[in-house]
Length: 108
Image (cartoon, rainbow, N blue to C red):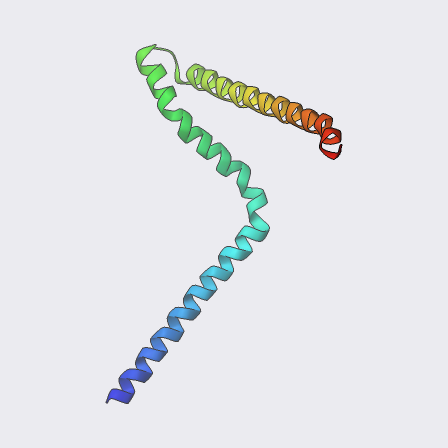
C-alpha cells in the first residue's frame, strides 16, 4: 500500500512538472516571437491607465469633455517625456564631452 502511494506521488510530481514546463515553454515562445508586436499596445495600455485618473479629475472638476481632457493629458504627457529625454541626452553628451576632455590629463 505504501508503494502505491509513493508511485502515485511520483506520478503527480511528473504530471505537475510537465504541466509547468509546457506553460514555461509557451511563455518563452510568446516572449521571443510575439512580444515585439504586442509591446506597443501594452505600453499604450499602461499610459492610458496612468492618465485615466487625471482625465477623470479634469472632466469632473473643470467640466470639459472627455475627448478634450484626454487629448490635453496625452499631449502633456508626451511633451514631458520628450523634455526629460532631451535633458537626459544633453546631460549624457555633456558628461561624455567632459570625460573625453579629461582623459589626456589622466595619462600625464
